[in-house]
Length: 339
Picture 1: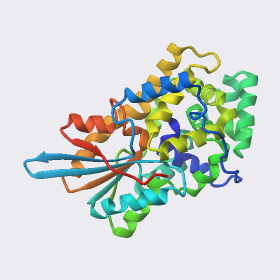
Picture 2 (picture 1 turned 90 degrees about the horizontal axis):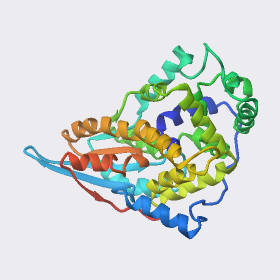
Picture 3 (picture 1 turned 90 degrees about the vertical axis):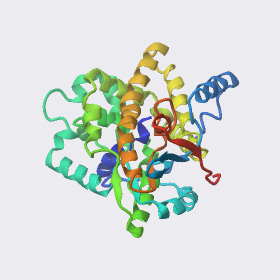
Picture 4 (picture 1 turned 45 degrees about the vertical axis):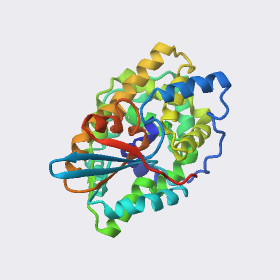
């Protein structure tokens, strides 16, 4: 799910730091409200995925040089007081680690900011038709209404790259304060690593996000905007549902919930929805997972490593845990305090 992409969170934070504050998200847990038949379908979909539950894991592998050890913590990129308990549980592993791996460290964040300052076209459209020219009047009106709730004026929204606008729409207006805080679990781990003098390395280049979405067609990007708009009225509910699932250690549950919910969106069919979700999962999660494995393995050769990244990257048949198993690692879940 796109709310888990930390590089996009960093991009959005650069914009929203200068915008008005918003109320905290207060909504209903949509999974808890599912009818029994739909809940059973969701539970079956989650159960079909390996390592579907749990945010904290250990992977070990015996080699001729000794034992390699990796601790993996799935993160939630927004600020939340419940992170304190997680930090306390992960702290001993962070103290023993030789390296902290994250999606984007301080150097990558600085490089991202510099790249945007040098080339605003990475995020804004300067040539060709703008979004108001590419969308129906009613659709664009819905976009401007949604962006106003986030403090973004229509003239600015009209210039955004379509993929970036879809990401902003995927972040509820009520979550903007947490994004501004830039104090998600990733950020807290990076700050603690700095205190310890622990090297922080990135799992991927800072510009991964641009190549990721640059490969999408114009129609695919517009489709992402329309999908986000269809969920706009329940933005707070989705935000609460996401956070509840994460802190319950059930991050795969939110992905499967959104996949099944997409079948009911206006103009959707199950086949079309499944195709779109498969495309998004491959581009945003599975391809990145595969690229991360050599980076994780290389770090593990130098001593214990703590790898922290969006929780949705852990489970699944092409999740980081399953990929590590294929490389000969034995993975086991580690306990975290209940929230």
